[in-house]
Amino acid sequence: MANPSLSEYLAQSQRGLYQSVFGPEYLMKQSYFTVDTATGIFNTTYGRKVWQALNNQTRFFNAVPRTVWGNTAGWRVRTDRGSGRSRPVTETGSLPTVDISNIATVSSLPRIVSTTFGASVKSVFTAQLEGGIGDVLAMENEHAQLDHVKEINEELLAGAAYLTSAGATTTFTVPAAIAKHFKVGDAVAQFDTSASGHDRTSGSVVSGVNTSTGVVTVATGTTFADGDVAYIYTRAGMTSIDDIVSEDAMAVGGGQARTRAYDLTLNDRTAGAWNAAASVGSNSGTGRALTLTLLDTAIQKIRENGGEPKLILLGHDQYFNLERLLNSSQRYMGQEEFQVGVGSERTFPGTRTGLVLATYQGIPILPDADVPKAVATNDGVLGSNIYVLDTDYLEIAVAQPTQYVENRDYFAANALVVRGLLYTMAEMRCKNMWVQAKITDLNA
Image (tube, helix red, strand yellow):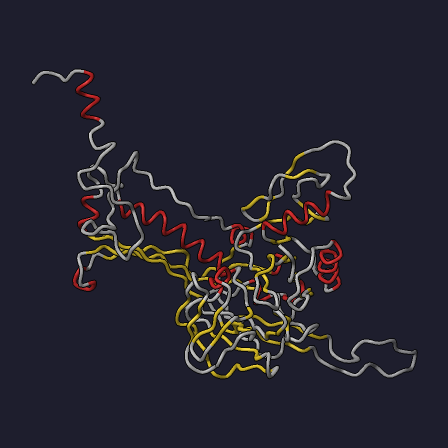
């Protein structure tokens, strides 16, 4: 057979590049990738790489130190020095009264996060043909890994309490933008604003979350109404930084919440107690502008409690608010860009004069798109919170590193599909809540 001419070779090499015998269907999300329906894996393609319009950044997860779980299910905390055990003694005076320290216990157990994907055996084969997307399992595995770490980051930054705009015995509604903070399996309590009372005994467990409408479905028990506060007192997933930086009767959108972390009881996070945050700066659900005084107070409280802030965590809205705030009073000569490392992350490039932020008072500033936002008394969404953290006492303890399991048991699945699973067993631990602070009820 004669060698093809250059024009014939180009024509053959481009076959299927601009058309597909399978039609112009586009890649869409479904339970399994198949080729038999209009939501198949074939599309008019100019290349096999699948790009995505999703934010997969996980900055807070990358910034928090990670450690091996170790042989422990918790730790003990010394919460007072004892009464009158130290005092001046005169030459022949009596000794101080013997007293002992108060030792409290904290329980911390690992949580499991899982991510699944799957494809039919037919789609696995035909995805390699013209118009396909290549190795569909490899593609989904790659994307599932991104989704898995993103889920962990969202759990670490899940808000703990929000105001409801409607409710019933089995549902309540929050703004759709913040519905993702409620996860299936979370136990939710209620603050009834009309009666100024808490209902924490009915065991309302989240069974479904609609992130498009903001409707959260719970087990029958607590009756939610417009203006009530729904707050999470037991997480199905990892403990979030908002659970940790909390206190009893914390103001939420004009109501209050008694969030908890680890095995702390429901009403013992009194402001100033050993298990409360250094400072929770709220404004009763009324938005206000960020000021340096608010930020300085959070830093001051941490230092008064014996800590040293290592990280300022905020949303991108507060990042720009803080930048504008410092620009108005900045005096500088020359500029020199620099960055600060936080865990495996780095801050945005900044200047030592502060015109583009990298640090404040020497503390690295790290914006994360998943930082939770506050709610106003009218159910509206305010700006993101600001967390000032001493990360020396924060860690992500890993009991089992991320595992990948693939299953091709067609009889068990009762379908000709290949299924994949990623799971991680870990938990965020805070050894000292008294050196963490939060500023909330800020304008965007």
